[in-house]
Each structure stands twice: as C-alpha cells, then as structure tokens.
Image 1 (cartoon, rainbow, N blue to C red):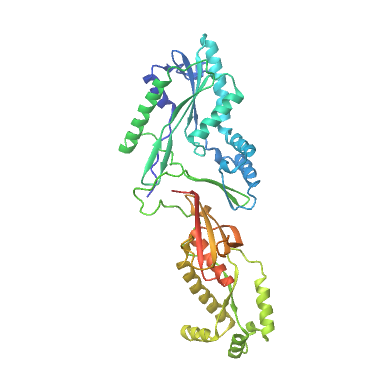
Image 2: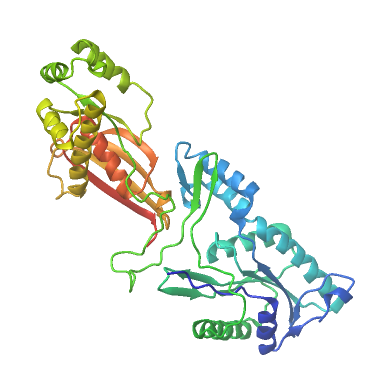
Length: 453
C-alpha cells in the first residue's frame, strides 16, 4: 500500500482566492516593472505572497550545524532526535536560528517589495506578508509561525502584518489527515488588515474544494507531495531524525498498531553472540579422551582455560558478545551421532552454537514487559528500547542487569548502552547477555516517546 500524494499550491491558487475576496493582482507582468512589486492589492492593503517549498533539512551545511548542536548534549548516541525540547534555552534559540534559513530570504525580499510598492502607490497601505508553508515539513505550524515572526521583527520594519498559512498532510497509508491553517499575526498593531476575515473564508472554501477534488481524483495538478514522514540524515555515522508527528489516536484500520518501516534490511535475526564451549574439568577430560588428536582442546585443562580467557578478551562488537556456553560431553556425542558428524573442534563449536540458539530462543519467547506484577525473578536482564519515528532502523536499545532487593530501589548494572537495534533484535541481544551472565529471565521496556503512533 502506497501513500496518496497531494499537489503543491501555486500562485494561481492564490490568484483565485484573492479575486474571491475583492482583491486583485497588482500587475500581470512583473517583467515590465522596473522596481520590486507586491503581488496583490486590496482596498486597504498590499500583499506579497511567498511560498516556502524548500525542505530545510536537506541542506548539507544545515545538517552539519544541527549535528554539532545536538551532539554537544548527546555525545554517545547513535541516533539523535531533533527535538528542540531536549535543548537548553540557549541551544534552543540556536536551533531555531538554524532552521530559519529558508524563511529569511523570503522575508527580506518581501519587505523590499512591499516597501517599494507602498511608496509607488502613495498613501499608507497596510503591508502584509502572506507566508505559506508549501513543503518545509520539518517545521510544524507553530514553529513555522514563530520563526516567521522572529525573522520579520529582527530583519525589517517594513511589514505591518504576517499571515501564516500552509498545507499539512499526515497519513498511515489508510487514514488521511489534512489541515490548512490561516493565521493573522499583527506586527504593527496600529495598522489593521481589515480584509483578513474575508480572505480566510475564501482560503477555507478553497481548501474544502481542493480536498474534494483530491478524493474524487479530479485534481489535475502534479501530485508532488508525500505526507509528513520521518526526516533523517547521517553525519559521522550518527543518524539524526526529525520524527513524524504522532497521529493522535488509534488507527481505525490497522488492528494492533500503525505499521513501521524497517530499512535495516534485516529479515532474520543476525548472529548475536560469539559462542565458546564452557567446560568443567571433568567434561574437558571426557572430550579430550574422545578427541585425543584434536588440538582445539589443548593439552591440559589449564591451557584450555587460558585459551578461553584469551578468546574472551578479544575485541567483540557489543551487538555480538563473547558468550561461554555450558556443554556436556554426552549431549555432544548424541548430537554428533544424530548429525552424522565426526568429533572435532569445529563440530564442538557448531554444537555449542546450537545449544546457545535453543536457550536464546527460549529466553526471547518467554520475555515479558516489565511491570510491578510481571517480575517473577529477583534477577533479570532488562532491555530498554527507544522506538523513534516510522523507521525501526532508528531505534536505540540498552541492556542492563537488574537485581530486585526488597522494597528498595533495584540494583541496576549497565551492560551495554546506546546500541542501534530495533525491538526484536534487541531482545535477542539481551538474551545473549543473559546467557553470558547466567540469568534466566529477560524483561523489556519500550519507550515510545518518539514512536510512530
């Protein structure tokens, strides 16, 4: 199922809206005018229309500046959410200054056009900037308006009022939600834009017709815009994500939850451990007797323990820890007979991996969401998964060992943190660490603060 697309707005749309309100285009051919002109004229006002179509997060220089800003507070994260609410006040101002780039040029040019037009027309028309979000989906309506007004107030005194509008489209491929804000923000309170109410009514009528035509398939404009989706980019191996806003209520179509994408390409669980046979002295002696020529087992039990320690000290990926697995000689013999394998070091390693896989699958199957009622063991491996946006490739997990001690706070020992792994993968990683630490229970917490809902 694909997303339905909608068309971008264009100046022709606003020509019709203005005409329905009693206004008109100031000139029909801008190329014949020597100076900058506003677009529309009303009885008491002139309007300059600016369609903001640039997706600000696509610019490489802006990406680098945002990366530097957020990494200052989150230096060890593999995925960083571009949420200004996570920043302190000073950094938050810096964030909005960075995001203001696509609007600043429009505001400065519009101010010159409005001022030049007002001077040529004489009198004192109200100078109105009509700023339309026509594709800058990294900003919601409130942010867009906030930045627009800041640009106007900081950069010019030649705008009396700002009308902030836009088309915002959200979809889960079945449900579709759109809204078309149209808000007046006075800058010079002594100069009133009295035609605004009529203009807003015309805008609302246009939006209603637009959606009707879209649903009926009679809108012939190029359908260029997808709904608002996750915006992401990577800098130095770190993924930065502006998550899709939550839909705000449960789906009327999807039975459990709105589907998420998984761009990792992982269809089956990757290896989550480097396994190694863990032998008691007695088991080692039995295996050594069964494989007297096998160098893998070493000549003495002390050499075997040293070999195991050297292997454990190798530099392993935290997603794939070194895991000693207890194995028994009798079970290894039975496996060799069943699989028609010779008793070799290679076969012993494959058998060890098989034992690990069975235990890990059982731990994953029995994993439970952590709650006061769900805790059945005083010691368990806890995995916390942060679900971020629509793509589970963004998700981050941490694994910790928890010991519940009476009514006091539990003793928590961090094992690994800030691994980029989605829920099912993270459970398997936690199971590997549980086997490594001799823990028989895996529990989980799913942090859906930034999840797609």
